[in-house]
Length: 175
Image 1 (cartoon, helix red, strand yellow):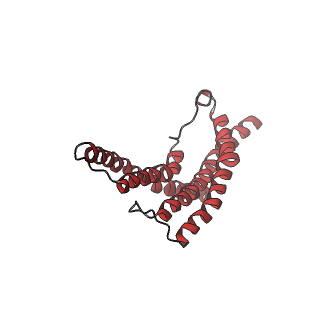
Image 2 (image 1 turned 90 degrees about the horizontal axis):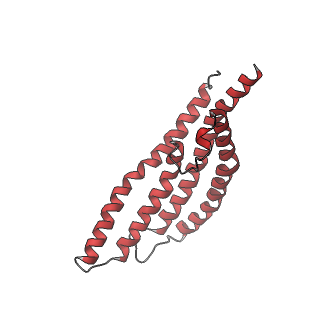
Image 3 (image 1 turned 135 degrees about the vertical axis):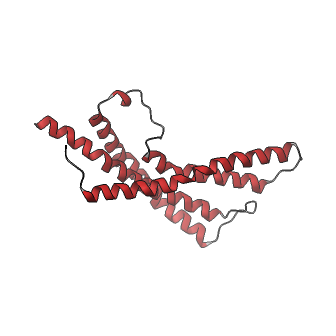
């Protein structure tokens, strides 16, 4: 069994830390639940509604979804169809993870980052806002870029994590 190099371990730990740092926005789920409760009570008990508050709720939902995606992937808590995967040997799962990270996740995230960058930059250039929301639209569009960048890092982290397991089986087969 070959040990990962110090540089590879350091890179993996940095990539995990970035994904986990962004994933710490999950506490926004509590804020969202309380906000929904407040919206329902205001609407049905007090007869008052606010489009701005409802739009803010949509922004919170987007923040949770976008910023927690890389952390969820890093902790292997993402949605996966495990009908076959769970029962396969570790080296097969590692090869699937490596292939998925390099062939699917990395290119998709890179394209999203590339397209999202211009999308957010144009929004920043005109200071895009919604007349109904307290949160500027350019911040929401910037979260898209941040999520895509963190998914690129998560794809690299997932590929680097899978490599030693793929190699280990090859060496066992050779010997």
